[in-house]
Length: 314
Image (cartoon, rainbow, N blue to C red):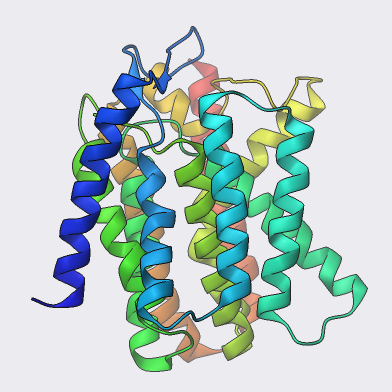
């Protein structure tokens, strides 16, 4: 039996055990008037994401120790937050500590100026991934696209140990079976969305640094545009950005247009897949990375605003 098949079975067993424990100790996501779900659902099923990373850590002979420490820190505090809500400042401080540790793993030398820029980007990416984890299937399908893309790119470039992509990819497949449903058996929770986000950001930065190719940043453009514009608009409207809401485009597609959770999740994932395809098979070969970075980002923003405005007019 291959290590990956064995790991897949172990991850299934771990998630089944967690579901029983979560039910016993009432680790639930209770719906409210701003929720996108209507029934009480187990929270924290994404615990299999950091577990898969630690499985890789042991299997690899303890590769990337600083990154693993960061994953451990953010997973523990996020799981506590899933059980008992923590103050936003507490979460932010822990996220900053985790990201700073990741920077130590990624870069041997980095000026204070660039460190602050990368810190800001990674904190934004972490919370964007968390904000977008709001309907059934979104985190599962979108993460499958991102990790599969990174796996494909890594086959030729080998910018990272393949196991660091494969083990988490298996955990997302397992989670998808329980979450990509009309009635999800569990949600990923902060422990899942934030640990997975930190992993993906780590992989993306390694790829960008390894290739000196900024276009790869667009592997997350769909999430970045929706979460970024929603955050800015809510801030300008004087809203508390830490409170639950239904302002994201994906939420409005569900609640205003009546599209199903799974269809909206697939729509977002398909758009990201198309962009990733264009980047890998066409734009990288053409060159002029900054030009295409601007064009694709502008196009994504235009499409977002077009759909958003059409919803608001109804």
